[in-house]
Image 1 (tube, helix red, strand yellow):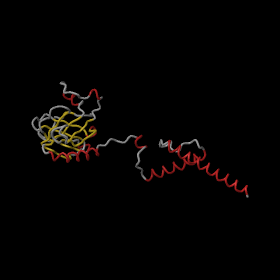
Image 2 (cartoon, rainbow, N blue to C red; image 1 turned 90 degrees about the vertical axis):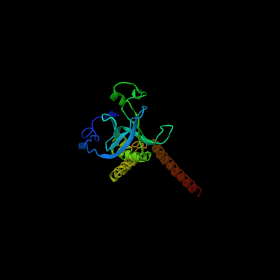
Image 3 (cartoon, rainbow, N blue to C red; image 1 turned 30 degrees about the horizontal axis):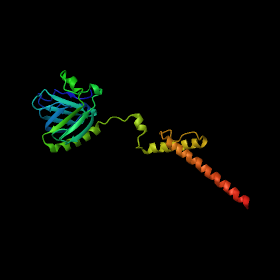
Image 4 (tube, rainbow, N blue to C red; image 1 turned 30 degrees about the vertical axis):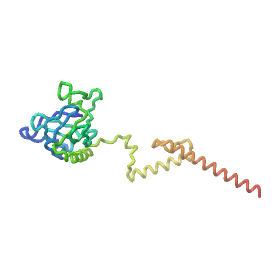
Length: 229
């Protein structure tokens, strides 16, 4: 499930930490007590405890043991430190959430209704530690966990990746040699078609034409001088 969701279960007798998916190697990375949470444009929740794991962000209320929220890192599309008092009065960690919902269905107001449905429409939240000096530490931990949950690269993006292994470089060189040989046999073949660089192909072919004209001009000049002698 993408987006923000309710969390009611805790370890122990309901007063402990959130449950971790240890079967999928989920680990607790950081605990930040005394942290308030602001969902969208709602009023701040009473301070609770923030649990950052290798898979998700979980906030559990300290006053209401049945209240808690969680979001997977894979759904966190942006996180940043906010110290602008015009945006929010206290230093905080601002995050945007990809909830998989169309923009016009996302929360624009605090409509009453089913709470879990309302949460699925929230696209941003703020984490406000009671100690403002902890904001930068939270940001760094978010960065580390986000890297652990990066989305897989699509095939099309891999084709245009600028980082190559030694084997890939050898294959690229072999393909370039074959491409250049084909150009010498057929001048209409584009050298840049394999990577979409058609301007490069045009420039190379134009250079070849200019070189040929230059050679022809030299031959004509040489013949002209020989004729005068």
